[in-house]
Length: 417
Image (cartoon, rainbow, N blue to C red; front, side, top):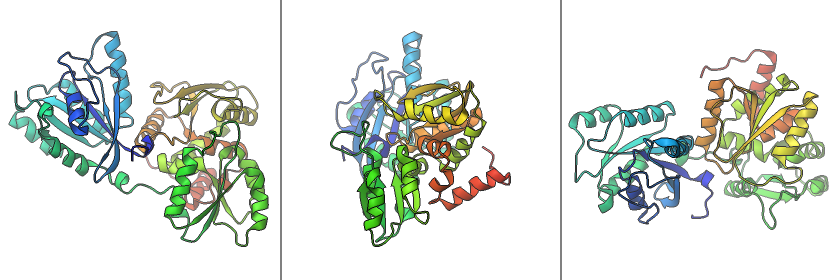
């Protein structure tokens, strides 16, 4: 359970002013000294993360944040990091004291409400002061769970755990399948996994491992091959596979070697719907046709790694898009949880498969891009579009493929934001 990737954990953010007991609450929840506790306001500087198992939900990650009311230049930097946590929070715990409710708390509630993030209000230090009855009634009218606690004595922690369970979104409890809904028990799936300079030595990358597990959970069979062995593999099979899933970097070769009557897509496109919104990403991909030399494109990479020769995000995608457009494009890159507030200069945004992110963070970025009027897509869809195999790559998703065709014909009606 400890090895469960962050992207598969429920993210629970702990927010509030300085010195209201956020760190004490985290320590009580986890029964460990995770965050430093002090009477000095502003002790927590950067977000502190603690993965654990919270039954019956399963793997979660608690994020203790710096006080949102921190001041000064350093305080503003801390607050900015805290606001970054908003984007990946599935459930928010707003910690305050009985008489500490005010502008900051209302502002946080409004932020969570705008993001449709479930929130729990914890009144800490209730041995010193209690919240007013009118405030409790106001929160109850808004259907916001309220917990009274004394974190240093672990009082109220059981009730907080119960509130977290009740507030957990159903999409977390009934998480989406990566590929299981596209196959049937007994089906054969071929996974194409290149072993190149970017392949980690001695192991497979996370999307490949998770896809294999999902296939096995679906009582199907998978065969893992390198791209140069695919055609030979088809010659040896007695029955055709239900689907071929490939690393997007070898899309062209795999498309050429896969019979037309066999469905084909990529790991990145599978993750576009699990981690984000496939329909939105498909619409975003179509913005490639509007790119012109001199335009600015933002490329987001969830992992903070050092790119190597022929890196997909910094080398291959820029090369393919430059060739498609026929002129120089200005590419900017962001990594990890950093994401620009001002997207105004960009013509489109291209995101990685986001296997290391939870879905909430990717959806937050999609929402931010859509409000700014900037198309957003992901690596696999960008590669398929720029290489001219877009419809082939969407063949396992007939509803999305039909939407794409309607957009091309000008007959699709998009829902308002």
